[in-house]
Image 1: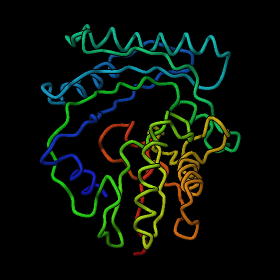
Image 2: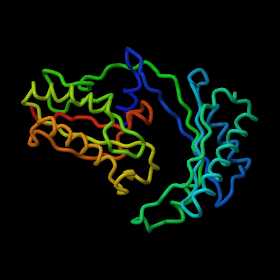
Image 3: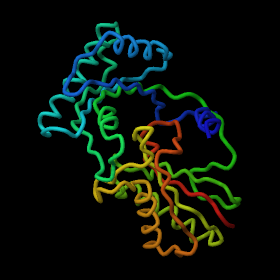
Image 4: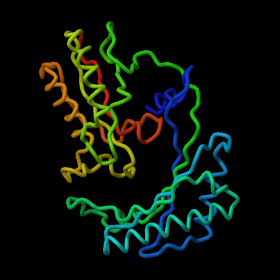
Amino acid sequence: MRFLTLLLLFTFGFLHAQEEAVHSVYFDFDKSNLNEKQGEELITFIKKIDSTRIESIQIFGYTDDIGKEAYNFKLSTKRASVIQTKMIESGIKNKIIVTIEGKGRILIDDDIVENLPEKRSKNRRVDVVINLKPLPKIIIPGYYNSIQKNHIVGDHIYLDNILFERGSSKLTFKAKTELDKISKLLHKYKNLQFEIQGHVCCTPPYQKEAIDKDTRKRQLSTNRAESVFKYLVFKKIQKNRMTFKGYGNTVPLGKGTEYDRRVELLITKI
């Protein structure tokens, strides 16, 4: 899978999305001060990146779920500002820091009881997101952005416009428009059977799945796949041609977080 991710970073054309590099700085409970070691690690991380590829930098602050929402929002914003100040003091130009935002607290599922203090400690953080200019990449056989006439089993169709808002499984107008086109092709090529695969971005490594903000359940990638399934059924695609499954954050594209909030099709039978 790592080989595939690396290949996806190169094509004869250019990607429209950005690659990202992310560094997290963790804070003590109720604190926003940055120690010397944390500051050095942050600057070292940034300096290791090819400066000619840095498009912009975003800083997002978070807190754990303890305490009042207003206080946590203020604390998360302060943590983000501390990181911004450190970066500017180290010679990073302020104009490329396009976002400094406190996100407030990160809620924890009621079903999480093991290692709760550790999980909360990982939520007391600031994420520094380095947006990189795209690299050229090669086209990989078996990976398409629309339905083709002569597919084989195992082909993937990446639906570029079927992307979701963060934490949501609701289809956007743009996604429905894309699915309208896909459904016409599926009616044309009636022999194709496929799995609808849902994906998410931006969850910690120890948490493979994300919470759907509408249902409040940790099954966001499955809900995204099911949303596409239901829409295709609405467009009169036979149910027995389709299955759906959520893959959480286990299959990143390496094209940017917005492209991991996606659904794709895997051809299972022709």
